[in-house]
Length: 252
Image 1 (cartoon, rainbow, N blue to C red):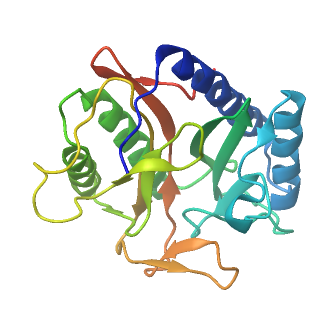
Image 2 (tube, one colour):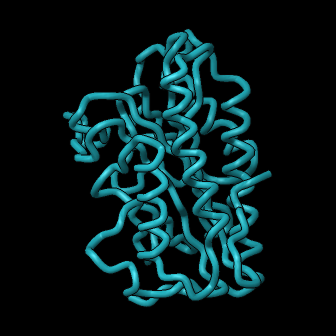
């Protein structure tokens, strides 16, 4: 399947839905506290999206039960909200999708709950820094495999490893479109595969593990962890390629 090129008006539609994602994440970042349950955090996110006259895109997507992925500590992505109480020293991944007028937005953060350890802050910093490094180096003509390879090198140089078998993706009229964008080089040659072009819109989402990038899915059929059993982190933005470089859409 070809990677779609969005027209300027379509990118503006995507900018709206992604700004709603950013607003929701910033709202949760401001109000989530130790003592709240994951279900309460999800309800806060869903209610805020509804207040924007938009729809939580993840709710019901592929059977996912909630509007917010709440990934706590060892869960790196796709955590299901339940009655677990978040505590001081936890780290919490929040991944949110919004649909507005048929266009999708998607972004994620990993946030501290109160004061966290230096080690956990470094873990969070790795996913954040990798994301912004990738956005900074994007240019038209670059291959997606080159971008994946650069993210992998950045993660490894920071002392961590990328989660395997999960990836970033295109986005538009559907929450997941071509291409798939792993955080590591899939294969041996980064100088092959499709090139980045103006009008492409996609999500980059570094998923960071400490020792092993081998993924495992928990009994709930959704929560993804590393086989090393250690904490992980995740950050994500939706970007559009405009005038030869990447512009972040998932901001207020």
